[in-house]
Structure formats: structure tokens, C-alpha cells
Amino acid sequence: MSKPVLTAVAWPYANGPRHIGHVSGFGVPADVFSRYQRMAGNDVLMVSGTDEHGTPILVQADQEGVTARELADRYNKVIVQDLQGLGLSYDLFTRTSTRNHYAVVQELFRTVHRNGYFVPRTTMSAISPSTGRTLPDRYIEGTCPICGYDGARGDQCDNCGNQLDPIDLINPRSRINGETPIFTESEHYFLDLPALADALGSWLRTRTDWRPNVLRFSLNLLDDLKPRAMTRDIDWGIPVPLDGWRDRPDKKLYVWFDAVIGYLSASIEWARRFGNHGQPDPEAWQRWWHGGDEQARAYYFMGKDNITFHSQIWPAELLAYDGRGAHGGTAGTFGALNLPTEVVSSEFLTMSGSKFSTSRRTVIYVGDFLREFGPDSLRYFIAVAGPENQDADFTWEEFIRRNNFELANEWGNLVNRSVSMTHKNFGAIPAPVVRTDADVALLKASEAAFATVGDLLGRSRFKQAATEAMRVVGLANKYISESEPWKIKDDPDRQGTVLHTALQVVDDAKTLLTPFLPHSSQKIFEALGGQGVWAAQPEIRTVTDFADDVEGVGVPDVVDYPVLTGDYAREQATWARRDIEVGTPLAKPTPLFGKLDAKLGETGPDWAPIG
Ligand SMILES: [Zn+2]
Image (cartoon, rainbow, N blue to C red; front, top):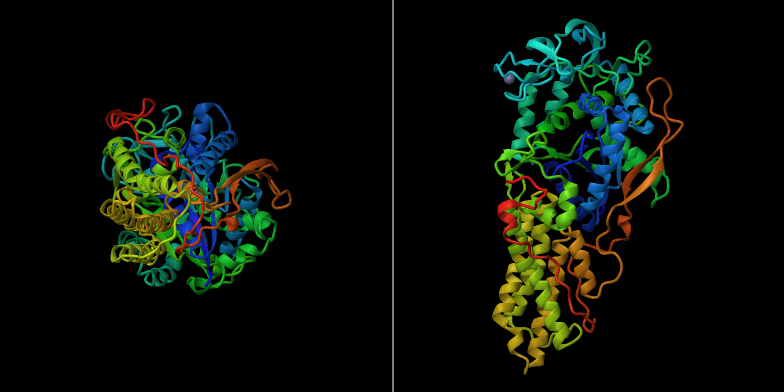
């Protein structure tokens, strides 16, 4: 039976173009999952957008001499194009600088505050002596008091990974001009995580089927729950919606408080724009957010550096909004909201053994990659060799090997020779006459793969799922080699039966591989006589922000911006065998996957860093 499935994809940060390490953590796994769920008949809502607040945007904008908004506008457009190019089938990919998002975030803040889960506290805030302006945490660096690393930032030490306060740093200095900040008292709102600890723990302990590393990490977080600041001394972000706070230019909500609320605000924006078959239906988001796991499932996809925010901060915000912590309370205007069904986190993709890094030029941008190689070979690499359960390494050598041997030799060649032999000898799909044991065994194995691969995809075991689908391809290649249809021209019945069997398995395999390779599966669908859309792709549309949502100081102007959305209901892909139709004319096929020059394996393309 059809179930609402929310695919909540981590929000790429709009301070630059995204690299292939980013999309291997959130984008591709989430899309493979969503495409499978749609094919299996579930009602998918896949949402995300660019994350545009916080200090890194400000730092980058300062360096480039533009405003934070201008910087976010620029990279929002770049990221939207890259994600469309990769074929990520978002129902809505939006951004956090919309008035809709501001309104939803402020509603959450007000209700969490009313329910008693924000505690005010005085902290020491850093001020620049030369300008008198607040210096946000990340603008400050110094020596880590825990490990002694000299480049620690005010919010965190990249060397030992500990969270810090700027005042803890030894020899703190401004990253802008090197001066020593002065510290003054500053008032902030802290989320009362200790009051939500029991509720968080009860919920987490029911999540037994998560990836073990994610569950272990999340449970460990419970041991050290302290109130956590959800406002910041910064002038770029969402205003704090309380009297005495909302008009202050130097106080905004913490970027992480607002970014995770994006899953809800994007669902609401989707409903307001496209909720009823592409037409507005403002209440349509509720199916994915009410009634708990029984009514709707919610899967959150991200890299491991974001687990804390999805298995602790976001559920804590939801529990506080719903009034389910130690202080009680009642839900606000959105009603009681569902917690994540699963936090599906990937590990890191490294580049020839080291971390992707823009500054060290070990980085491959998604846009560059797509221009050179197209989307499906990258999608495949990430699914089959990506960082699903442990850190994985991208090397050009391995990428070329996977492309040439698995996609071109194994899969592309199976399609090509089955279709071209049929075209040459019959011109159309021949009828099977008498099936041998070998024919029947292959057909059975191929059909059985729908259950195995589907079960793995439903549990986000992408590596195993891709391997199982490719096993069917291997069986079909072996079958053709052993049956040698090119040698049995004098027995057209047998030759036709072999080719019919091979084509049926090609059709099965193209369905099994659709979540990974939607673009090439569409081409195979057409090569086998299919018409229309097999696997739908996202499109970019320009929309106008809602005028009536929020007012006041620091609220975004009503502007146009690009979103990703798509008409996925029209796609014909379903998760089951389709019997191929005897008599369908087949044309001479064109190769699906180009073979790449093996020399690229040593150097990479000339625009890419040397691995
Ligand atoms: Zn440290």
C-alpha cells in the first residue's frame, strides 16, 4: 500500500560550489532512495535547499567584497544547476533566505519558547576593539586549550574536533585583522537539552535498525547533554521573534537552529506551490509530518559531520515544539510533528587519500565533473564505491576502472549486443519458442532480484543493492557467452528464444538500475521501444517569494529565485518486471557508456587536481 515517505536531504551550504564529496554524502544516496520508493509505489516528498545563513557566508562575502545576500544568490544558482545536472529528483529544492522559511522558523522558536524549553543565559561575547562590532565565533582563532593546535576557531577545533567557546582560546585573535578581541557580557537563548534528554533517549532507543555507526554515535551524545545556544551575536540570519530582540541587528538565530527547520519549511513551501499535482494545496505537507511512523516515514540523508544536528538538535527542537519534554507543553499551529524515522548518514569521501579541500586544491567540483563525464557514471561510482559505511577514496584510476569495466564492458555491452543482434537478425523482438533450463534459470534469477535489490534499497544498503543488480547483468553476459546466439543462425527458433530471454533480462536490469542510472535507463527504455518518460528528471523553475508571511527588520525582500521541482507522477518506472512485447521493432543501438582513456587514470582530466 502506498505510504508517505519524506526524503529529507541535507542542505548544501551556499558559500561556494559543491564538490563530489558533498553530493556523495547527501545528494546521490537520497535520490537513489527516493527513486526506488516512487517506483515501489510510495508517495515521496523529497525536499531541501541551500543553507544561506551563518558566519562562513559572511566571511566569504567579506573576502569577495559582496554582501552575504549577493554571495548566497550566486551560489544558490550554481548549486541548483549542479543538482539538476546530477538528476536529483527533488520535489522542492529551495533556500533558507525565503520569507516562508523565516515565518516557519519563527513559529517554531516562539512555540519552543512558550513551552519553556529556552533558557536565557549570559555569555562572554567577543568585540572588535577597532570597529566596536561583534566578532562571531568563527572570525576568531587561537590556540586550542585542549590539544594545543594553533589554528583552532572560536566555535570548534578542527584538529581535535572539540566544540569550543571563543573565550577558551589561548591568544585569541581576529581572523579579519589579527587584533585581540575584547570580551563583554551578552544575553542568549539556550535550548534546554537536559529537559529533553529523557524524551530523546526513549525515542533513540527505539531506532534499532539504523546504521550501527550512526546509532552508536547518537546514543553517545546523550551522555553529555548541556543547554546549547540557539542565538548568536551576528547580523546575518533570522531575527529572534521576541519583544526587545526582533529589531536588534546584532542578534540572530543560530544558523543550525534554522537550517534543520528547512525540512519542514520546504515541505510547506512545496505544498503552497505544487501540493496538488503541481497546483497549490497549502495543507498538503501534513501527510508527511503527522501521525508518527505508522502514518508516514521520514528519512534524513547527510554526511557524518551532520549527525549531531539530525539525531539530537532537530529531534530536540521537534520534541520541544510538540511539548514532549520534561516541561510539558502543547504543539503550536503546525500541530505535533513527526520525528525522523531514520538518520541515514554516510562517512567521508576522500580524494586520493586526503580530505577534499578547496584551499589545498584537492577538490573536484560537481559542475566540472558533469561537463566532462555526465551524471550516471558519478552516480554509479558513489553508489557502489562511495562512503556508505566507512570513508571511501576517490581516485581517477578507480573511477575509470568502474566506468570502463562495469558500466561500458559489462552493462553497456550487454545492452548493445542484445539489441544489435536482434536488430540484425530479426528487426524486432522475436517470440520465445521452447525454453531450456538455462533460459528459465536466468529469467527466474532476474525476476527474483526485484525482491532482493528492493529490500536493500528500502533499507539504504546502496552498495549491496548495486552489486546485486550488477550480478544479474553478469549472469546475462555469461548466458549469452554460453548460448552463442551468433552461431545458431540456422535455427531461428532457438536464436530468437535466446535473444528474447536476453532482452527480457536487459529490460529487468534497466529497471533494477534505474535508481542509480536514471538517465541511461531512460535511453534503454527507448531503445527497447518504450515511449514517453521512464525516469523523470528535475527541472529548474523561477518562483516569486510569498509577500504576506513576515514583516519587520531584517526580513528578506520579495524576490524571484530558482527552485528545483519535477513531475515525477508521469514517470512509467515501476519496481517490477515488465514483459517485453514480441514484435516491437528495434533500431541499431548507440553505445550507452563511452570508454574513457585509461591514461586519465594516472593524471585525471587537465582541469582536475592530480590525485
Ligand atoms: Zn584541539
